[in-house]
Image (cartoon, rainbow, N blue to C red; front, side, top):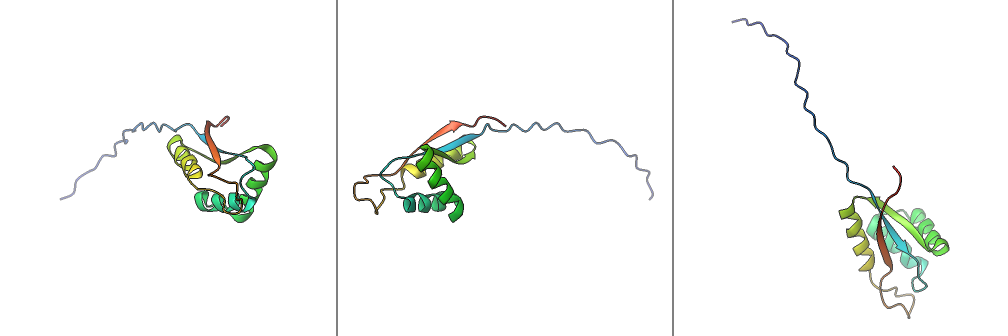
Length: 109
């Protein structure tokens, strides 16, 4: 049996995708952690390359803070918590704990 098919325009489905606002994970400087510690932590937690981790370690040392990741709020909070739970720097005897980090709304696009 042969039937004629009529091409009908597809109904448009309006799927509005809501994008989550971006947040920065900001690593804060202190004098109780070595470059080696910072580089190892950034590689393990964020998967940054050795070069990128070194550049971030140098920036946090010079500027007092560095953005280590920009992502959604939930993941930013998780990464901040992982920084704060990384533990003390075994290379610096006076070091008693992890580095500090904050989560801040990202400015700009």
